[in-house]
Amino acid sequence: MYFKAMLLFATADDAEETIKRVAFKFIDAQSLITALVRTVEATTRGFVATKKQSEILGLRAEIVAEAKDNLDATLAEWGYHLIDLQLNDITFDEMITTSMAKVVASQNLQRAAEFEGQALYIRRTKEAEAEGEAIKIAAAAEAEAAQRRGEGVRMFRQEVAAGLADATRTVNAAGADENLVLFAMWTETIRDTVERGKGNVIFLDGSVQGMEESLKRLAALQQLEANRAEGSKGPDRA
Image: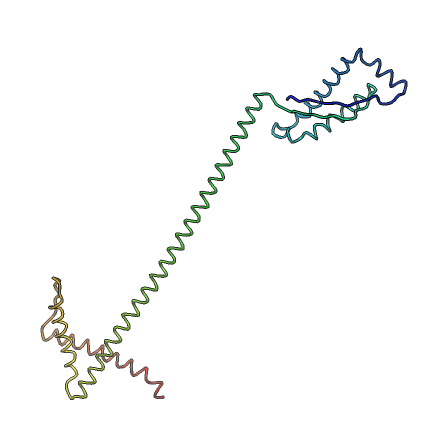
């Protein structure tokens, strides 16, 4: 460690004993300066040795206070009193400065890697959350669409059943057999299959037994719809 020091001191007092110490403690002024320099260096470097290199530049006031405490006692023995001490231009050996720069650079790289990892984690988390929300929205939309399709099929069947019931009442009012309606639907189905078919092969049981079986199923469907209609009118009649 290198530094520059400025000391301001004076004789402690004008007592005879003090004057003798000032005059005869050292052979000449240069000896006094040499002693002061070595004392300041020893005190400063002793304090610095207990600290980390990265802390030194921020401990200037503490270094000065430590040096002053030691110098006050030493100068008092020499007949002097320390007025002020300043330490300036604190620097380190080039090898130490280079090693400190490498340490700082490695620490910066480590922090940068940590920040990058955190940013990647946050981005991946947000992407996963967004994907989850998109899946939820798509599932909700599909569920609603399926519900709508089911309602459409149900309404279509209701309308078909209602049409059958209405046609049957009309036939009955005319005194004809209600199975005539079912027979007409059977023949229309065969006709539409032939006219609108596009190469698909559909096997229909065209026998009398097959037609009778189909008519029975349609009649059962018609009766079921009629029962539902009667059940819905029950509370109104009450």
